[in-house]
Image (tube, rainbow, N blue to C red; front, side, top):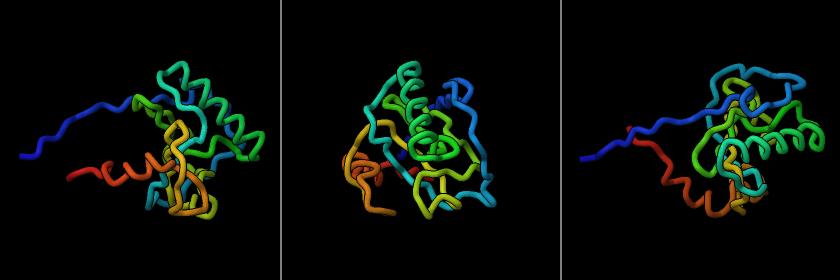
Length: 139
């Protein structure tokens, strides 16, 4: 018999991590057809306070150094499983050039090395990439 474990997901809103306001927000014209998994290529973090600082730093880098209108990812996940709202639901991200209009970008906070599905990058890292098949849900 297959046993399903129920787990509550903690989502930290933009207000809670003190996100800077976006320069603009482009709404997705339809539901996302796919999810693109990334890593932030930064040190990993655990816990609300430490990760709030890290995510704010990522947002600042994306907006000032990369010229994005906001943090590039729709959501970010820290080492203990807390989910942080980036651009959020229904907003076009800036996570995978040429693939943002119909996708949702989720980044795991940390550096996991080597990735190669949609571009020549190391994202989301070899260790996380090899674990992706195990993340498929059951119905």
